Length: 67
Image (cartoon, rainbow, N blue to C red; front, side, top):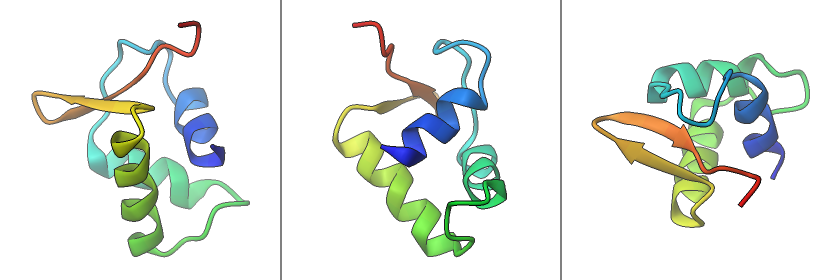
């Protein structure tokens, strides 16, 4: 959930796409998230698996938290 909140705060709108690289950078830059690349990749994949993120044409998008 923390990873979702970090990514959500790093985008202006849920419809804004971000690359996997940008998502990893946002997570690693956050002071409370582990800086290890494997941890960021795992967190992103888990968010996709649980429907918190989805992919469109190679970009990640945040699922609308209002739904």
